[in-house]
Length: 467
Image (cartoon, rainbow, N blue to C red; front, side, top):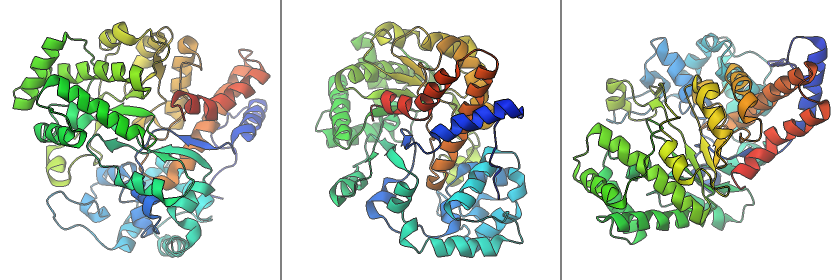
């Protein structure tokens, strides 16, 4: 076995037995995957995945950033270059490189995810290494030729009840349209991601805004036309099942400007004349505008702030965005969110889900905010903290002030499709361990723990994201 059956449970035998019992109650619940970055084209076309490297190595920034940190070029892992330069095209060579360096992932979340995929998805019980690389590659490669390993079949095998992808506001959603037309019963919805038309510092911002207007049939050279275009596109996304918008901003700043001030900022943004502070202010004001639109159309508002994106200029130039060089940064929430929360934070019908990469803010800022504002909920540990340690720290720091019911369960936020059940399994084990410890220390009754474990694994995500 690659996986210990009691992994992530407490070491005290009595508490471990209770954690195992709690986990056994919830481990087979359907998966609600309300936020992530899987490719809707997989489900639209339902073609076989091409090879083990393209499935498990090349698209996974958790994997290639670790290898790259040890001096292995991204080109050697087949990561495509923006400039069209040469990268490794032989999937077996990429896989061998991964296998030879698999020891680098010891005690990381990636190790437990990949081992889970190997054992539970592909029935492999030998550790991955240089010696077993070809044997395991051949086994997975053979599996991928079978209908049981096509995207829709895996979706059903993973017991996914609903999954949300994430598309730009100026995406035509053609793959979601094909899914709708296919007659397949899997629930794959989209999420409205307007960064390209909200962030004045986004490449091609003015052109993107023009395209937004063309797609919406609105004059986006005017402030009112621009807002109307967003309303139009949000409605279009809702027609493809969208229940949320998603905003990946450098900071958590929000603003609530007078319309004339916002219009002037928008005009400067279109002309490319915004300073860095003005660009941040415009992004912040647009979060408040998006929240107001959510009061009308019901979309859940997600804020993913605090990543210093594309930290390496050289990698960004050569490979583009999202290539492992996004780094967590300190984030203020108390002052940053005040304009938004003063405007709409008391609205019980609005759901604003805030994430953080700055763990120091959980107990000091986020839990107290979510513990009083009706609209505000805490997203689960995200990205760098999607781990046993990160999840446990989150529960320990947030529960005392926000409780369980101002959080929204778990989401996997992944591009790596086959890791979805692994990630949810980790979350369910960690929550079972945390709840068992509360019971063992007299802070929670066992019957309450069983109710909470169900809510954390399933109900809260389904309810918060309106799925």
